[in-house]
Amino acid sequence: MLKIVTAAATALFVAASPLAYAQTPSPSSSSPERLSALDWNKLTDLRIDLVKAALQLTPDQERYWPAIEDAIRARAKDRISRFEAVTTGVAERADRSPIENLRDRNPVEFLNRRADALAQRSADLKKLATAWQPLYQTLTPDQKRRMGFLAMVVLRDLRDDVEQRRMEAAEERE
Image (tube, rainbow, N blue to C red; front, top):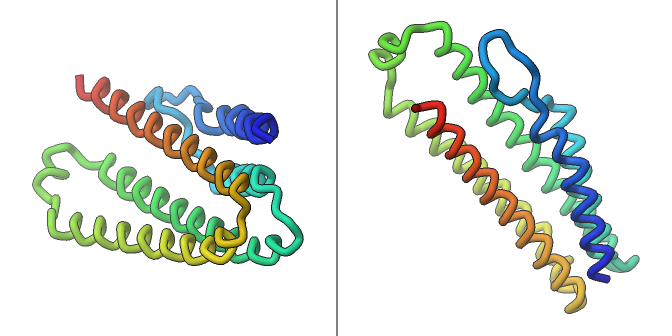
């Protein structure tokens, strides 16, 4: 059983790595290429397939899956929207000088935008937890261990990505 989970996790990381680290030469910078909405949807599909394959749901458990998949997709859609909003804001500020950006910044608007984004993330996570609750109660101890393993791998990968972004940001400031 652990071999199936390990193989599925390896397949996800192998399939997702080119999407996450694709680079394109750009005349203005050497930053990584932004993922398109289609790429994000493919990555979401891979993650959903991985979780479903790892859990090996019984026919009785399958009836709970559509609500979970809908919550995962809604969360991914909202994440894409947030990334697009940030990208648009950065592009708008890129046309202006640093002095103009500093002079025209509004910390209250920033805090409100941040609060709205956090509220949306909170609502998405609550919806996901609510969707998982009925299925989780039906999982066997073995399925719960597999789910815990997947959560640990995802959280470790997320932590590594955050650390990599911090290091890249530090290098850009130097």
